[in-house]
Image (cartoon, rainbow, N blue to C red; front, top):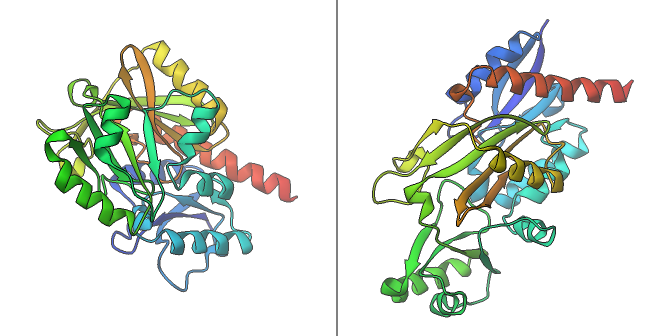
Length: 295
């Protein structure tokens, strides 16, 4: 009988993604069956799986408290989670970027605003000399409640931000035009080892690089300097993670981190020959290490 690993999905998209189908096929060579299981489905015997790998559980951003409760339940039951519990809790809210900045990582300039507080977009633009700012929640994905503000739209933007701050914490980041002109890098690592990279570009006239909004990606080999910068970031946090995606943009000759994705990033496995196999090897090694520790 084959071993079983759950790829955590969500109830609205219970099946694993086309990208993760490639990983499942690679894991099958190790005698491992991958089953897509929604994290938000009741009555699942999660402890019955050899491991639970967080993959397309993207709707957790709408239900962060429930997601944390689910994570805590898995931990109590001794479920093996990939990536690990501590990493997931740390990576859920983008305020983790503060810790990376304190450790010397160059991050896109950011101002954080806690839930229930207030902040003037106009004052931020003036104080930091930004022409435009990207506004988004600190717990977000797929451009949820994300838009670009400038002096020409302050009144409506301020009204929208004030409304959102009543429900969630927000952040304002310097808008970098290079995202539109040059694209955003995503470098993928397995157990701290470089695997492959893509450049994500928005459709014309937009700044959002996600496929949901017409964005696209293409395989690209980053310069050595970019890889070195990504690996410096991972040495601060994430080097031991089974999978990690380092998202950043080149700005004025420097690689600035946008996000360090350690929970459920798309890994673009289909963009590089052997990527799915490398991911499968990383998962298998992680699970085998757990089994060895338990003996």
